[in-house]
Image (cartoon, rainbow, N blue to C red; front, side, top):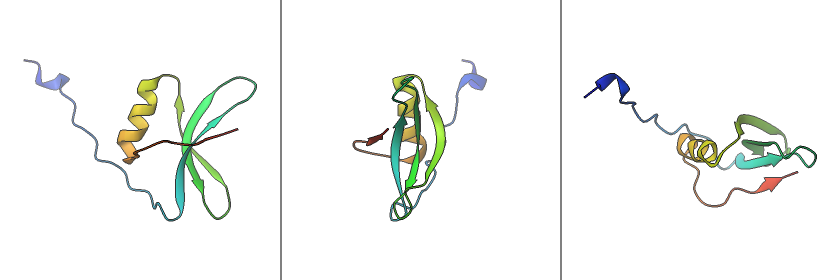
Length: 74
């Protein structure tokens, strides 16, 4: 077995759910989707990763420990 092919699971990175909420920002024109966090108080969006496939969204969920539905903003 090739042990160098095994990848460790990255621990979930923490975000403060009282200050930030996970959202997906989608472009109306191109349909490009970006996952990130929006500050609840100011509405400022912080981009984390580009979503090209459902696997990218799953990776975002695993990395930050996000469960449930993620709202989409335009």
